[in-house]
Image (tube, rainbow, N blue to C red):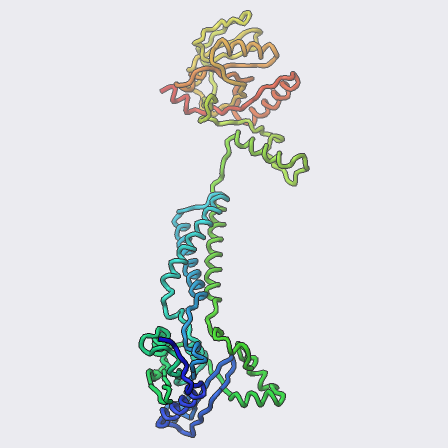
Length: 501
């Protein structure tokens, strides 16, 4: 079945039948004065009423004017009563709902200490996930809400909602729809008329009419509609031709939303569509909430402690970026300032030991032996080898010497060696160069460890002491043209206790 025009049913014919119906329908309505029926009325905001009937109400009904209007639609203007889906409103509603859900969910996770931000990478990771969730939620919500009546826009219905009238009618020609039974556009128009309390009248090709829906006796919606002042099209044209607007027209122009004088805007059937300002507001507030939480979380992130080796590498990368240029700022805890970045706690790095000792006290097990021509005068089972002030003399201690030490100690490490012969020879070489070198057997501190560590001078109580001595030692080595990598090793009590047990 095709939609065809009925030649004897123009829009003027529909208006004429509509006027006759309105006049007949309200002829017995109680009134306190003469009824006035006018056609082609115009009101501020681009409002059009094809016909308007008004008369004074009786005093017992509260007085004032009773107003009934109708909108006439023929085959040529049929799109005024066809619904179109408001895809933009669907998307914006979905975006607003989705962003609100995402923001509230993220706030809940923040309050419950889940999914926390700890660095810049986390911020990017969180933001990408939030955008993905927002997009998925929005897509699913779009599928769900797309069938709601809210998104089926009918120009004639939306125009009725823009102004106050006691009763409003949609008057259509018989040829506006293909079928009054199966046409989806007609069924939607009928449903919206019933839902909003508007009347629906169908004009047949023989100029008879069919009353399909009558207006509700009371307003079904609770929104306050504005009072619109109407004038006829002829009166509006006359005033414009006489050189007005003057104060009267300016007042109307200022009160109008889309302009008052008829023009292109009146031919645009979408001008009564809903704006997106509230949806945009919800999206903006949700985004602001998410950003606020991300910023607060990032400020509460834990401090990241670099181990010394990673710290030195970071400083080197910082200096490499300068490429010889004068820096704009200064990092005070760098190798250019004390303390030196030599302290390394390297329990998990192979071949490097982070020892833990207790404060040094007197030990009764002391042996003094001499070394001649590099031949060790102590056995390979010795625990500690210490250089004394006596020439060519060294003393050895066993591990029990350290059992009563209770404070952290620090030593300036030169390196690690596997055998006592190797370490004894190395200590003698350092001593011959005027350096005070000592050795420790690692078995005193770790049951699973073996070999020896060579360190310079003595054990220190603080990093400040060890750092100052390391600076002096580095300067002395430079003067002797010696390249030795120095490290400051932390020694704390736990492993000594483990060894005792």
